[in-house]
View (tube, one colour):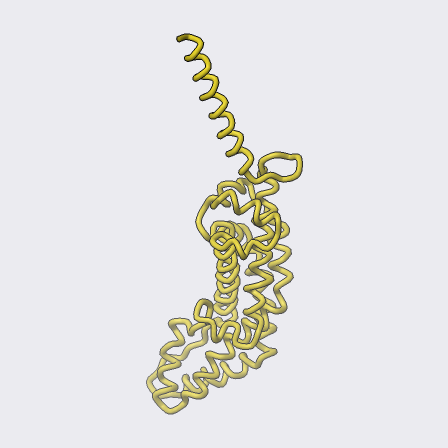
Length: 237
């Protein structure tokens, strides 16, 4: 009887070990280093953000990349909505449309010039706890990137936006538009800082599109186009 019990216990133990080994074998491996560590996970997160820039942010640099993308289209700030309405009310809808379009054109042009800034930001980012970010929300890596880089990127991006305003003629169009509005009787003059506004909106658009790609990689196996992405993001499936 005792011998039967010992044999049964041995069988159970072997079965448990086999099942445990099967689970271990299914864990993502990296060469001879065993289960992926923080450094490898961080590399995978950077690669995902890089793909966001390559595949999604690049779309913003095309004509209508902002203007015809509802996720990032730059609308008029609140203080200029009354300008838009007033101009349309007096038959200047075409001018109002052009004013909105050139804001988006400036952003499209600026993102094209500033893309290397975002690439460098991703390269330089340090993920203190990459595993928690990996196991976080669908845009956790993008949120982390935003928190670590937004202020620095704003300061670098604003001069580029300013140059793009001149390049696409937005400064002249808005000067004409606001002068037209200010000449309307019984209106209060406006003179908003459009460079500051468009800089913030364009930067937000960049982060939005990076987040789009991050979500794709997290939720679609087909979007994991490298071995590293497959290994890293398998951990959060």
